[in-house]
Length: 346
Ligand code: AMP
Ligand code: MG
Image (cartoon, rainbow, N blue to C red; front, side, top):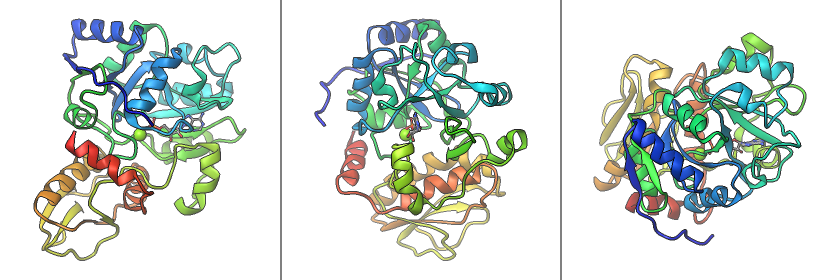
């Protein structure tokens, strides 16, 4: 994939002037990174095919991986997709919030085909973040926005993470604080008739099931790869890859390893990042990507050889955390480590 022409990335304040500038850039087909409650997104006007193409170029993202469209409110979303009864009920319960629904695309939708990777469905969401919703409302069109990182790298939960990977490749960033939830949205497929979990995320499956009953899930990552690559091409196994190798379910740690701790930390690590001292999975989710980035950077600088990760319970946001950790630990396809290296230099 050819590299985009270098640009000067404007750093905007999260105020009226910053929003006005960001809206103008989006209207002109530019790329603007902004915070949501989950992670920082890299936004473009979803109805502008060229702007959407620039997202893929800036991230180095494969074109078969569709983007999520962000809306200021559910009425705006229903202009592009058919929610059905289930979609409306889920929106009423969880929007604004970290739930993405994959729904049948309306024939009248103006969203660029590239944003949906040519599928007959679209992934839509109303984020629970004032900046993100103000941007979408100001633009008056959906904002296509994947996470604001180079493809395959760890998602950004702070403005500095975005700049580390994308400075000079995007037009602007609205610099607001760290993201509250810290893992991406839950992606729920409603287009197949019965709800199916495509990606665990910021809304727990337990909360969704309390409303709609059992949700299809539980396929192992490895077994899911082939099926998902057709149904939801972005859910590839290796993703979120730091440069240091990641080892899961550690019960012992070596002095030449960095430790991602959950609860009372194992003793003897070369370096430790605590996800949650008292074992709170929501706190751990909010600290996950910062921790992976910090251990990777500091661990490499200190000559450590890997990241050992303590077990995180498979409940609530633990499902999303373990999904990301399994991807971080998965064998990497050729070329992907290289992208992460670029980000680190960036
Ligand atoms: P990201 O934008 O990087 O958080 O990734 C969005 C996720 O949603 C990816 O894993 C996509 O594969 C998935 N996704 C987006 N649109 C669709 C769709 N129409 N059908 C299925 N999955 C989708
Ligand atoms: Mg992403």
